Length: 277
Image (cartoon, rainbow, N blue to C red):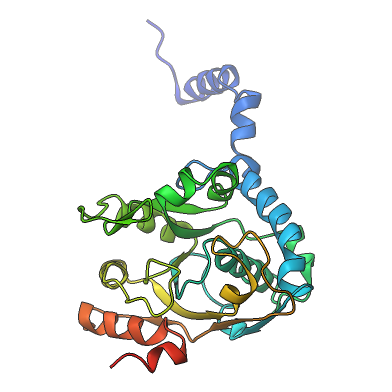
């Protein structure tokens, strides 16, 4: 029996590898364009959608209305993953869309949304927490918007416009954890677009468990400018305000109660805080 020498083994390996050359499909799979986010959405499709939707919505934010962005400098040097934005909530979709504009803008090192060339190469790894019923039962447009980064969860306190009392969505923390591992996540701790709403404790638990970098956000003017869903203009010439505060990262020494108090203080508008004792 012939014994392969190291040289013959190397030749045999080369011959075998030639037969096992990557197919064209395997090669395509290595291209960035076909990469997916944690929820199976193709990143290149997300970029196209964000670019198209950004182009469509830009006049609503910066021509028909006037958007003032403050604190964008806090975002420019943030890491590309592990960042959670906690914000008050005024419309279903306009709030998120204007934040997407800012996120894409700071990718280009801009501190405002005055230069929409950022839509030529938008950020793709952006996500936002949304009620499952809003995204699935609201028609074709919410389903399309869902592809841009919705993390859908079942609300334990409300369903189809009615108050309910059901168990928390146990899959939500894992979904948000996966999204944070890939990019930036926007969440609305009040869980509703109603003014003066209380802050729910779920976000404090998540922050305590996952330890993301937390960026508090104030938004204002969106209720005056848009309908509840954020699709239709109610009033032109409205001043829209978007304020990003300094990022903070909690430690093990910070309790859930500490985080909850921080959220309650930082996601309400100043006029809402006056009503909180």
